[in-house]
Image (cartoon, rainbow, N blue to C red; front, top):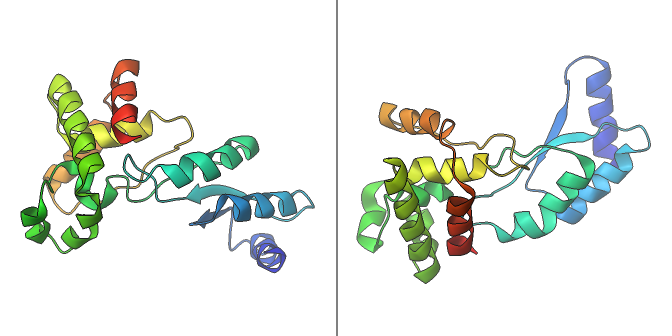
Length: 181
């Protein structure tokens, strides 16, 4: 870790890099890197984790506390859980809809269906769709600086834009938190 940070220091010194971020670090590894930075080495300013309504545990228990302590941002990837949180995949028959379909098979269980039901309920109240609500849930989380989400169609881009305007109530967030706990 120290050798990596020293290399980043050289890249920063010659102007090739402004700031550094990490991806897929454990909480322990992130803490080590941030502690090493206290000795004058460059500091990670962001961590890119896998975090969404389905994949919450590792982030919330191990990463988020370290990030809050050191004040670093989080642009999580798989914000919509590989498309599962869009509501596109409701059963095994739906998995063939896209090349990523098989990647969500693990979410087709009681908990996954509970999350989709809560997303549908909140989305109906906003005259929106589950994809927008899933992103709005992440945006409402103080430790998330900006969720990473991709679009392959213009209609999906509209969902990304509209999710930034959606304001979930504390009751809606609690409903989604409970369903995805």
